[in-house]
Length: 156
Ligand SMILES: [Zn+2]
Image: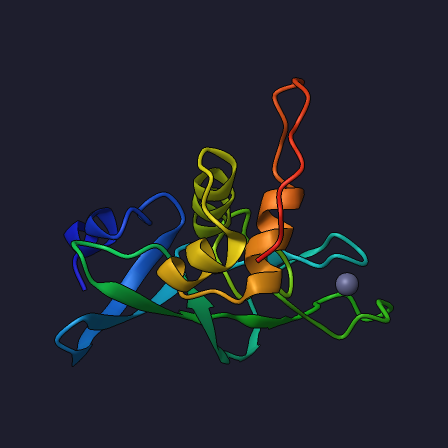
């Protein structure tokens, strides 16, 4: 897949798009991978490019061109090259997706701002972006604050 596709998805800084398929009239599925082929072991810090496997991880992301996007990250699970290291394998990490998160940071940010900047209910925003109520509420409650007093928001 060309770099133009990565630009279209706004992912060119860190990811490349491997494939794009139409799911239905309102949904596209994109398979992405990180362009960096190596990662540092979180236990010992040694750089490794030895791939053990490449599981697909589904993420929720922002809609694009009026279409829902199913983002599938083909994540590399790498083998630590250090013989003494107790951490045998680890997966690549990205600032764009927090560890164990199922939504991209840009979607979390958009959801948080949509709730914070309007009088809309958390459930309404969650529905619009296709995330659960707890995910939307957590995005809103953990958003960076600008220092001014925040208003209490009713749940619902
Ligand atoms: Zn290690």
